[in-house]
Length: 187
Image (tube, rainbow, N blue to C red; front, top):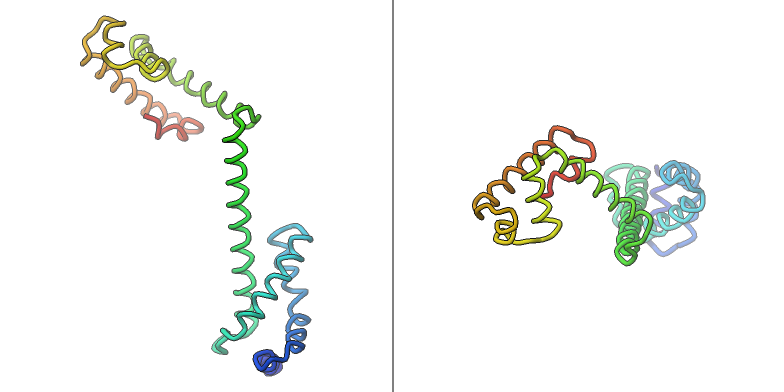
């Protein structure tokens, strides 16, 4: 601890070479820790280097209340977690962009096909008259008035049947669970 304090004071007074002592003391432990987090030696090496740079520029913030090693690891690990979040966010954005730009992307096609299959399974649970009204409204996008004319029932009946059908579908979704739960927000 006394030795670390001396190295820190030397770094703060402008002796950049003193920082090499800190690097040598912590590099193997930090690398092992980050390697366990990333499971990728190349990424771990990059993150270790970035973490040492981050610690170097923040070393003046160490307040000597706790041990230097605890402070050091907190700064290094926080840096790694920030980088993981950024990387995850970029991957999500890239996937959304890729899938958004290409409706024929295999993953988009599969998800759409699975969604349609699940919706069909749900619709089969409805009585024929309610299923027909649901299809006319949400697949054919007809107005209540148009549906009323087609099935020869009053608009109020169309509204009631749609309401009952959606309620039944929500109950089925809640009861069945699994993939259906993902659709529970559909109305």
